Image (cartoon, helix red, strand yellow):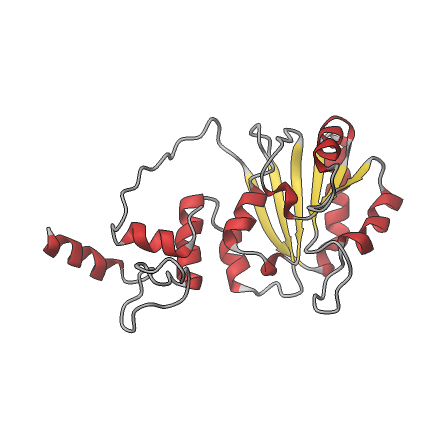
Length: 227
């Protein structure tokens, strides 16, 4: 998923682009924005998935407690899950054994507690439910990569965005946008494209009177005149 500046360069035709739009199978992923009021329903859904021999991934925003972040850390939250469910595995970016943990979880686990270390890497074909804690703290590209961890074999899957603010417009828009191409455009809309000529500025407004994400008709007319 391109960052805003790359998307802006694509829109302005400063770079040549080849698009691969086909996939081996169609993913069916339902994305929901939730808060603590939805937690009981979430627990029930997690239990149902485990009973069907599916797997669950819960992403925490950090490993250890921090006063600056109003969400539980991985260390704080693990006790809750280990007390209520069997075969709970834990890993994070500093874990030297994370690859072994992921391999063992793939074969034996029910729930994996992690940080964004699982954004890419080992395939987990039975993974059908992901919960992202403090989802508003992550970029749209990262959220999309994490969401892509579920439903790898076309199984019906779910992505829960846990937040203290269910009215967050960025999360609501993301939940309704399944395509990575559209996510890139959405990211450009929210963050702007930065300086398309200077790679050190990768987001933010560049032009005073032109918005590369919204003024498509203006950009299209300019392209036609240049031809």
